[in-house]
Length: 406
Ligand SMILES: Nc1ncnc2c1ncn2[C@@H]1O[C@H](COP(=O)(O)OP(=O)(O)OP(=O)(O)O)[C@@H](O)[C@H]1O
Ligand SMILES: [Mg+2]
Image (cartoon, rainbow, N blue to C red; front, side, top):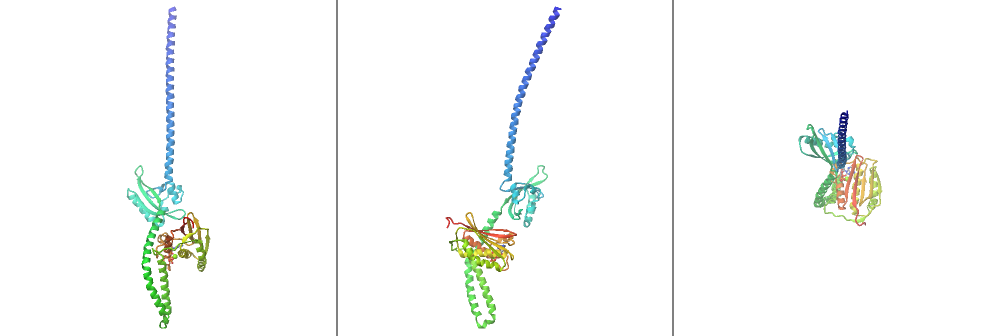
């Protein structure tokens, strides 16, 4: 019995020790796992943080590129195979003057001016046929009705599945560039005619003076009394030709202006009665809005001619009852003379040729009026700008204010 007790006690002690050992090693394992978990948790947190930062950076750079895309100085549109707009940046939308959301899905063709539809269809056709960039210059119709000249540069791309094609297209507003090109071409033509004017003007006028003298002499002779009307007609025609030559001569390249310090308003005020009576004859009204402006160096005779030519064009462009507004005002370092009519505006094909000597759309016009104006403006270092719409045209003559002021 005693030995049994002893053996039982021994067994229990052994069991206790082994259990203690198991518990201890279990505890050790748990604490190791906890440490490992904590390390992993820390690691995960750090990774999470890094991921969050990378995400924010990505978002920021996406926004940066979106802003670069949207506010680029040129319009970007993506068009599909049928010419419909899939994507557009904000500049593209604002060029056409339409909300971007309204632009998506629309055929680009809708915004091309009628006269350039063929050019655009050709552009699409070339895009489809070729794998390289296609460039076309044409005009787009903006929402406010004013056309703008643009250059389309389309680069073809394939969709990721390779099944369809689309064209990334850059739209650049070249209205201003075209305007300068036209101005240069106009100046070139004017220079050429100016050289001719200087060369032949006098040569034509001299024999004409002789002919006119003889016609006048014979008209008063008894023997030709029955032809007096014919002689008068011939003399009138010669006088008309002579006045055209006088105008033509003012285009002479070497002509110098007699510039004196004076006020444009004073010249306009002196001309006012003549202008008013011109207007009354054709049942039109003239409105003067003359603001205070600085003195300029002007050749009075030439400026009178420039004003009258513009006013006559304005009056001729309007139907009876129309109102012509003549303004003078200062705009920064420029004095501006503007002549605004309520005519039907000027078509773009006419606008391109305006100022070319002898270009006229009028039955009785000589087409020298504006050529003379451009030549006078050039001698005064002034520029002429035109704004035109179907409700009227405004000619702006911009003179530089002399430095120091007069
Ligand atoms: N205010 C205007 N509104 C509409 N068209 C205009 C206007 N001014 C000029 N034009 C167009 O420009 C053309 C050229 O004008 P320009 O004054 O040079 O010659 P013209 O008026 O035809 O003849 P003229 O030599 O007798 O002045 C005109 O025939 C007309 O078509
Ligand atoms: Mg005219």
